[in-house]
Image (tube, rainbow, N blue to C red):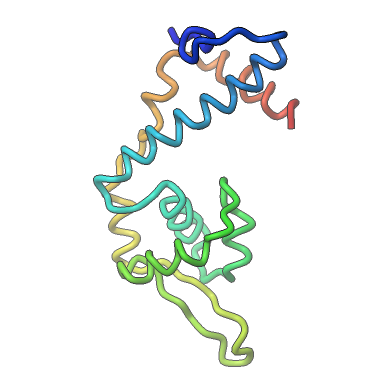
Length: 145
């Protein structure tokens, strides 16, 4: 099992500081693992999130709606969507009534990409905790926020 104090060769003034630093350290570890996983598919975890949001919506969504639903609030969501558009995974649908409004829809190619990605992509990240521990961890993180 990991030990933050050993991993970063540090001591902590109290357990609250250690917990906070552990959350940050673990978040970065998760991001690194996910970036490596998605490399094979030519997308980022944030782009995967956008595609899942669009597939789940089942209808075109405004860019702001997508941004609001993203797990990781991304100031560069438009750039992420530009890249998905260039790969033909999403399509922009301009409004007939208002030029400022653009809706985004997932394409057939985007759906096919999602189907090719294993559903258990995060399974290995959680292999060291059981269901009860996962619930406890989730409850604690909810309480913290």
